[in-house]
Length: 145
Image 1 (cartoon, rainbow, N blue to C red):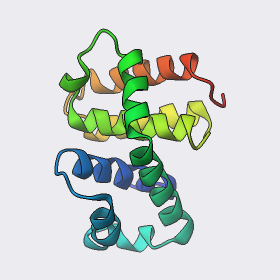
Image 2: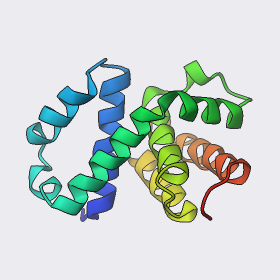
Image 3: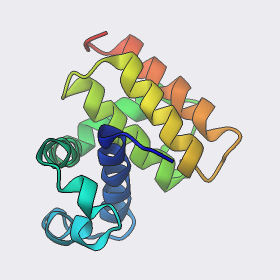
């Protein structure tokens, strides 16, 4: 399967966010060692890809509390703490990308849904859940459409 460089950066970003959240691995340690220990080292050594990964990861962590509140507000029907950690990492990353990096909403949502199809523990409902939450966030927050 041929995965684009930016999607690969997003995949590595959400995995890094998962490690940060569930594994309690500090950001500095993730940035220093994670990519060097993955099979994606060749592609991730591409400077624009690595820059996008680092920017997305650090922006997400920098604004994590705000992002979590935005997700909580958009997911009123669900208990935030009950969201699968993988889905939560994808939601956090995508929210940061839409709101703080101002990337185009349709692209961000499409990428999040495609990544969730590959990684969400709830293969049937995960992508729809992520699509719905991100769509709500896009409609209720001042971001680039």
